Amino acid sequence: MRKFNFLLLFIIVFAIVFSISCTKDSSPPKSKDALELPSITTGVISNITSSSATAGGHIAYDGRSPVIARGVCYSTDTIPTIDNSFVTKDGIGTGDFTSVLSGLTKNTRYYIRAYATNSKGTAYGYLGEFKTKNAIPDSIKYFLNPSLIYGSLIDIDGNKYPTVQIGAQTWMAENLKTTRYNDGALISMAEDKVDWKNNTTGAWVYFRNDSSYNRLFGKLYNWYAVNTDKLCPLGWHIPSNTEWEALFAYLVPRAGSKLKSRGVLSLYTGYWTSFSPNTESDATNESGFTGMPGGYRIYDASSYTNFNSDAYFWSATDRENTKVAWYMHLGHNSIDAGLSNDNKGNGYSCRCLKD
Image (cartoon, rainbow, N blue to C red; front, side, top):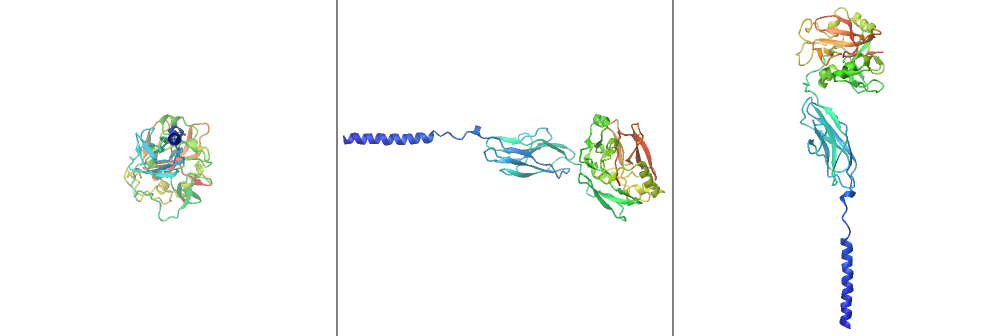
């Protein structure tokens, strides 16, 4: 009887232990299907040079699994991934991160996306793009007149311009660079030949579609952008023919010489050609206007012309009911300045005059 009780007790204890063991082992592991991809956005692309740029991203949610890798992937392909692109590795976890891109090729368009990886997989932010700049020596500077006192002006994009008083007028001493009207609206960029030719609402472009020209020569605008009366910063405007003529009258004789930037440099630097009268004594910049020979874009073609030899600046005056408007011209072969007219679709430089 005692042996039977002992056997019964053993069976009961064994059953309890086995039950506990089975219950513990029957808990399923956490399913990977219950996890999610991280939530990530691509950051602003900034500090763009000919060989580098700064980017990054923001991870708002880890998908219920720790973020074990993050950064940006970038390439000249339109859809960069961590498998087909250059990739930065910028830590782990959620929040903001910064990525430094180096070893880039000058004057090249890149596509970029931020990424974040957890145990579920890799998520990507929105697609961004940027174009590296051409390398320009730091020694190239504007030849502002050192004997004059310049003011300053900032446009809606944050571009800073020197300003100079010439007679009773106050002028920008550098070509306009804005991509937005003074009410914040974007101005269309029209690199394509057809887009440029057909645009009658306002457009801009870099000379030869190359952003490296922006530093010294600003942007080229069609006259339709001028006609909005919103191209210049508030309190400034594109000059009319009457106002251009007042400038010439104040500077005669040799107004053209007094409006041109000083010096004769090489074709690479983009200053005036060495043809007479652009010698040190004949291109004096006495006025401080610092006119630069930025050439222009032809309205019905993809070609650009007269860079390094001529400067063209829009006037606000047009010939009513025609496709023609006026512009101010500085030529490499003249000591004078004058007004002429041509198609409103041409791309010319712009200078602003204080109201």
